[in-house]
Image (cartoon, rainbow, N blue to C red; front, side):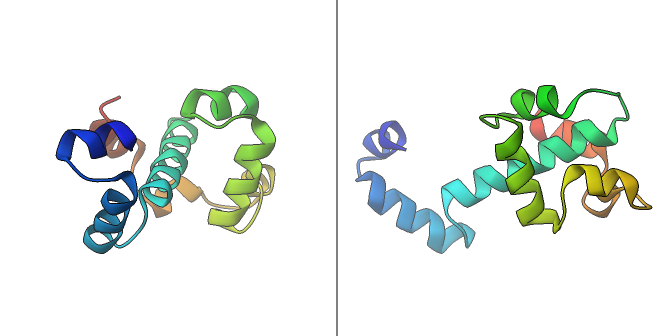
Amino acid sequence: MDDLAAEVGCSARQLEREFLVSAGLSPKALARIIRFQNLLRLVGEGTLREWTSLALEVGYADQPHMVREFRQFAGHTPTEQQTASGNLASHFISPQRLSVLLGS
C-alpha cells in the first residue's frame, strides 16, 4: 500500500480510506476474499491435494491460518465441508471462471 500511495501522491491511510469508500471494504478484506475464492477454485478443480499445499499455494501462512479463515467465511472447516453434501465452490463461482478472473 505504501508504494501505491506514493505513486498516486497520498498517504497509505488516505488510500485505504478512499478504497473503503469506493469498494465498500478494506484492501485487506478484499485480499482475504480473493485468497479464499482462489482456494475454492483449486478445490473445485477436483485435483486431489493436501490442504497444507493448497493453503501455501494460495498465500496462507500455514494450514491453521487457512482453516481459521475457511471457518470464518464458510462457517465450518474444510474437512467438515468435504464430508457435507454438495460443493461449496459451486455456490460462489465456477473454477474455470475464477481462473479467468484471477489470471491463472
